[in-house]
Image (cartoon, rainbow, N blue to C red; front, side, top):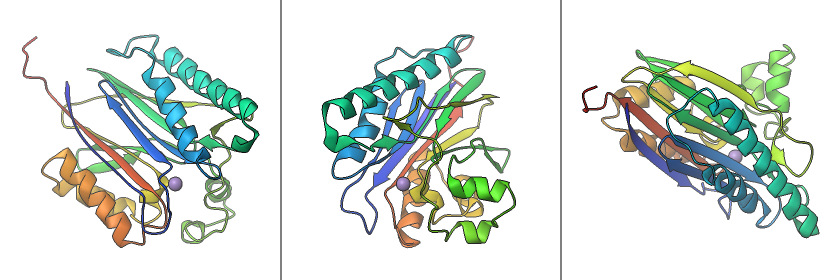
Length: 242
Ligand code: MN
């Protein structure tokens, strides 16, 4: 399987710095949405992606899940060390949604409220669960989706890669078929662009970069209240015969 990848990150219309980041190097794709004062959020997302990138990733195998989990634990420890060395970084953290895409399977490791979606057969599936206060209220039936989108605590996470406790990592394993598209995004996209609009973009786009550009454009047009980052990866049959 070969991956055709499009990506884009934008500071948005309101914020002065971009604490989001992405990393792309086959077969690993990842997005991170940092939080913390001053430059701490940018540092947290960068440290998390750097730590993931430092592991050797190749065709997924039986130990991919274990390796993803240990890379995220290592990212957590780097953030703990950075906070210990500089009191000004206290409270920094990041979401982390990473996927390793192989010939047959994809492995999604996820902490926080960035998301992974799978577009297949003209249908959009959300693969991840948001680790946020609001998502838990919705799940418990205490809040509906409309109120959730305006809730004052909609950015408050229940899990993050941070200097606090080691993160509990969700792992989602799916089969991969030619034509599948994986979308990773930060909440700056989903705050403004509904799933139906995301589906329409993925359906209409001629290539992955066109989809990434259009999704970010819609988030900015919808308000751009946050940093916005998208990675779009389309799996296509390799031309190599096997
Ligand atoms: Mn965000």
